[in-house]
Image 1 (cartoon, rainbow, N blue to C red):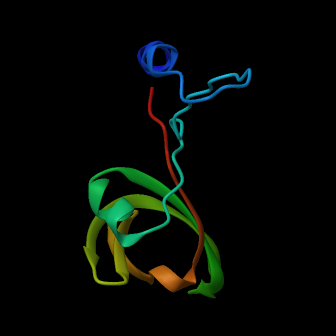
Image 2: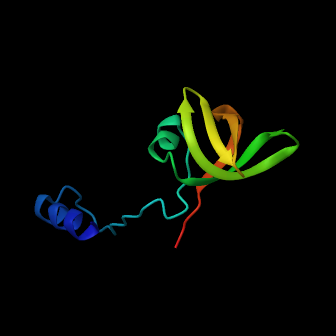
Length: 97
């Protein structure tokens, strides 16, 4: 990808000073921020860190089942748990090799 973008920039030459082009991806453990992110990855495993504990837990891991507005349903150990997007401090996909 960076080679293609670099080639276009070399031809168009919109930047007049020396620069380094870096293209990166969010990685295998991609962070999730918006409801759209969660909807895109329904069926994928995720780890969540909550702002406020639910059932005395702040850390959860399971499979994203559904997204309904600002509510995310995650299947954890065979049971559906529903979390408010506003209560999720951090969320990352779990990479599988």
